[in-house]
Image (cartoon, rainbow, N blue to C red):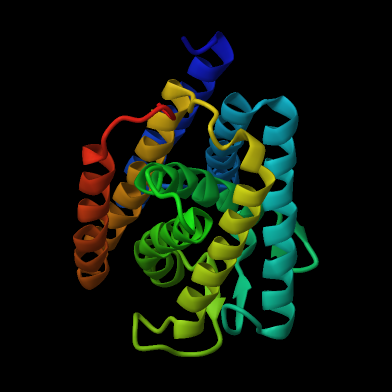
Length: 259
């Protein structure tokens, strides 16, 4: 059974999530509350970090969470500064506390992405024996890119959380962004797999395992609603077309000793 902290944390996120969907969908979020975007990302990342802690132990969970936050912030800083990995872009100040032209909250956003896709990738590759580490990293990276297919168009065109200085055929987003997402997520998942090699057989915490999948779906739902509400129809179609089979496969996988 989850403890009181876990219950309160997830319920707080759900409250923030529902409030955000309503305010953003109807464009009634006042400028004075733009800071709520940063809190939302921090809460989402905290959920991911809590999953790692509950499932792999406090020390391992904290180390993995800090690694994800620090590593992704470093990569994003290189990307913003030199135009590497994702293309040429810069962030809007609405993301919260900035340091060296980069919002610190972006690390928490990546923590959410990696934690949710970690659970999905682990379930989809649990029965593999040979090259499981590569399959796990590949599936995790693919799941991350699927999320980004709906996240980026809305964040860029609707909310302008970040601005591209280059162009691309997919809503003006350069292909290098999605390639960068895949490569970064692949490397992080691979490193996490190797770090957790001796703990890979640990039973997944049922409460947080389920909520990571829910969190993955909720994030896609939020950006799908915002996309449709703003006339962006292709992004929801392609995202749903890819995510539904993946989640069906996830749910039809036979129960194993990981659960």
